[in-house]
Image (cartoon, rainbow over all chains, first blue to last red; front, side, top):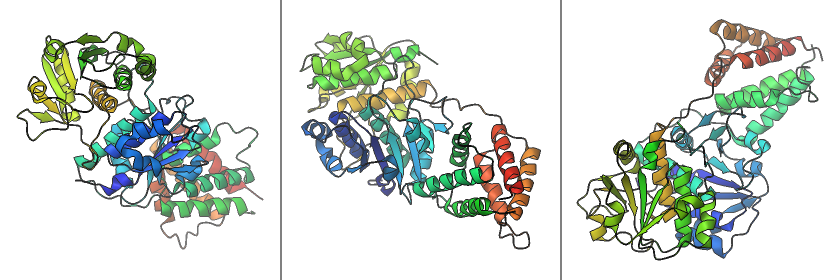
Length: 241
Length: 241
């Protein structure tokens, strides 16, 4: 397999990156494994000479990077967003190793874009940003020194995706996953409806919405299911007994 | 598994490296995966401020690196030397992917040192150097752009060794699944509530409940989630707007 179109649908989203060298390293790490779709969310640096030097022959990937103002914008058309983070136990998401995650990410990328999301070098991803992702990916590291460089983390993930792509031909997914923006909108409407029916008190939220997010993440919302849940939520919010 | 002594017996041998940044990146890539034994054969650069900056918290690995004058010296006490190279067909060695090579390298490292050998950024390894190694390791790359950065190559190999050491699988977070009877009861109550809010017509069911069953099955209902959904369904069924 030379070029695998699934790899071209794996987007790398770098959030608030500080170091130009890491932008370049990420671009090179991507291209060497056949990935090309790079999106920068609020970069804290510019694509400068150092970035281009580190990108080496992948300067095309770097120059083609889209710069956007929010994570939602970066993820809008994706059907799966996986946050690469060393955090785990305090979060409600399903968490996988790169090896566990790669085959399903690739399968989904047969039809629609999927995203790997990486936080800033210093602060990682905020809780709010993490909650916009369906999966966590934890790269196994030395517990005494877990400080993986950003470019190196992109390299490991891109490598696992390529390894999965050349490993076997996977069956196509038999369902159509719902896009990110529609899922976010549904969860917002669900929250409103839960307030309307008196189950949810935004002044005393008790982690209700994070738990429901996790539940929907585990299920993996499909387009047809999205339509059903929209109907349920609308009926719930409008019902007058 | 915190520290695996086998990883401490995997030596990284960098031959005639030109760029100080790559020395630092290699040291960081090693330490983050639990490797510590770094040997530099005739480096073409010094361990300078750039090297230390790229090493970040792995400056100890960098400072402890041994500098030797020949590959033979670097490999003297090892029981296996594997050359990381993109070359393959013109050489007589057994060639493996990182994933194929990692388990046996680790097994050998239970007792004696083994080595991963990386050539210079520009020239790779000479034939003479390659012939001193028993195995070749080929990292799968994009055939149109196979130029893997040296530090990134060290990262991929170190990652594969750690993944083999921890068996590639992180323990999944623990949760308590909801019992069958409680799930069935919930789905019955949900159906009633959907009738109450006017979303579901039992005379014209349109496969709604089988679809919702499938959604809940995909999510894998947990006890804590069961309590949440019971509350939502009760609020939905009783709500008088």
